Length: 147
Image (cartoon, rainbow, N blue to C red):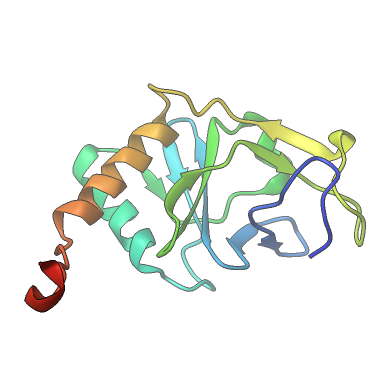
């Protein structure tokens, strides 16, 4: 990956020619639109954390739309998220669309998201983290090493 002028890039998103955002190169992708979580319903890898997020949304009454969000609509999104086994669920702070083969610059920023306390993105992040913790088993040191 090329270095970015605006700072480190955490993920690259894969889009169709018509601008539908399917997933990241290492993550699942979601947009929050009108209080609903939008994510591709097919043509993607269905990750473990994605499954947990969809379960949390169902339990919490957060609508899910299994249709890929469109880049052209990013200006009206309330937020965006990525998920993976190593990252769990992370809110996206800024979305950039640089010209092909060029690093991102400030002029390429298409959206900034408010992910502070009280945002749906922050709430979902906390709920997914709690779900993972609730189903995790602590691995201790073998008795011979614990002393």
